[in-house]
Image 1 (cartoon, helix red, strand yellow):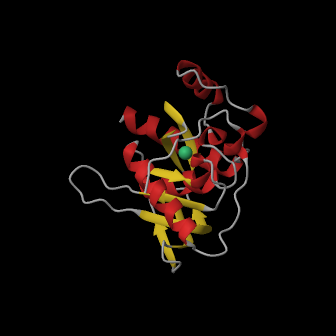
Image 2 (cartoon, rainbow, N blue to C red):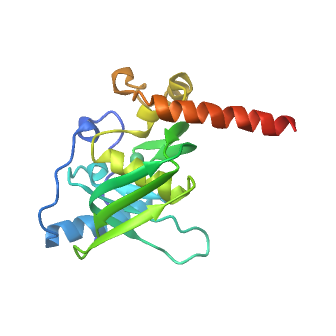
Amino acid sequence: MSVRKVVRYGEESLRQPSKEVHKVSQKIKVLVDDLLDTMYAQNGVGLAAPQVGENYRVFVIDVSTGEQPLNPMVFINPKIIKKSGACISHEGCLSFPEAFTDVRRYANVMVKAMDRNGRAFILEAKDGSLLARAIQHEFDHLDGILFIDHSINRFEADEVLKKYNLPPVQVEKLLDEPELAKQIDELKAKQIEDEKT
Ligand code: ZN
């Protein structure tokens, strides 16, 4: 088990799609353990294999906080089988040190994957929880998609990236998400309404 170097935004490997795992071999188990060690060493909530330069469909998440015991979750060959609702997610990424911005996410997701022992499981995460958002963020890494591609305001995202000496938003990678955008506009309007009352 070891802590690996995290690939930074700007390096091309973060944009490459990852391959399916055919067998949860010893090599994949070592990768999983290294992902966990690296995530904990960096105080991250999640980490995907391409972020340590390994383009396999594997990521890890731990949403435990404070005094709670660690709760490592391993996802191998994940598939998002259901998604619904929308939420605004204030996100960062270990490949973007210190940079946070608001992005669009689904509020609820159901994911099917294999654990470290190659056993299949299904997990549901709801209500825009940290877990629901982290699953979408890490899943995206496996397809070369980054959180800034979901930016609610790309100009704000650019400001933040510039502040931390990271390359700008890649405009051609921005995702068109009309359905999520519409729901988020409604959420924002409601928040303003709530603040008035
Ligand atoms: Zn990330």
